[in-house]
Length: 362
Image (cartoon, rainbow, N blue to C red; front, side, top):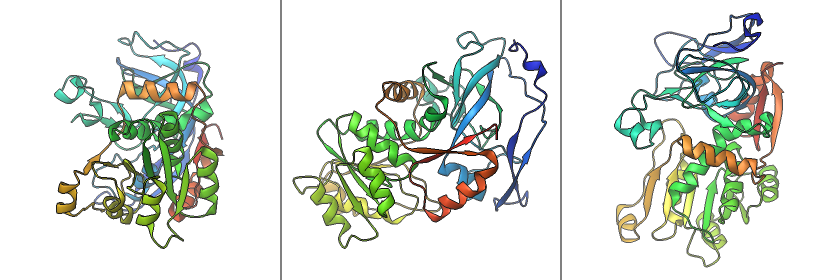
């Protein structure tokens, strides 16, 4: 069924990314298009009137085409879209017109394969990805599978919650995967960025002591204000390994490391300062990067190295609940859709502290 008056909406405004050549994953150009027909949801889908959409580093990878993963072209990017359900398919029974909902990176999955049955929906072989393999949330109306759209409580601010749908969810899942327990230390590499600003707060809310690692005084200020126990500036530190170990209190190193960096070097350093029997969780996806660690040291110190992808539906509900209770308030700045390129430029220069959120109406 369609929402009342939805048939009167004559168009939408969105950002499309075009591959420069259909034969490669080269740079893309983008442009704003207007007065495009509003799509109709399929039987198991909902149509969300996107009000705000966070800007993730993954969106920049979609623009650059530097991941070994083919993307849809032309493409509407974005995967942190918060808005209001205005239409739903005939099979949708648990999402109502007027509900708040979020379009996440995981747009849909089969729900029947062995991974989906074990709540590993993101590992589904038929998963669809918002802003990458299907059109995403840099537009005023976006389609999502009803089973996977985030359920957002009505008392939540759509502007503020948008980045939770990827950045918040991703680091919350990674902290769970780390196995760190209350009272232990977790080093967060890239702590002043979009993911890191959430990771500090989720770590604190989970009873952990966050050690922030990033570069520059602006990010020091952000990390400190958000509650980092200590801040290590990799641009000025003469001994990163020693400084991180020292920040853990007893000098043995953190119990867990969250690697949110967008460059390779931090992935190579982590094994040098992680505590014995600690866990290194790889989250950031720098293009063409590798992680390596000495085999002897990894074995005899029983170091765990693992990857963490996006969370499942239950992780989403839990991450949103932390936000709803006022425990997560990462800094963000709202810009218009036409300003998106300037946000990408700041990302490339490593100058973003916190998160940018796009207002799709301007």
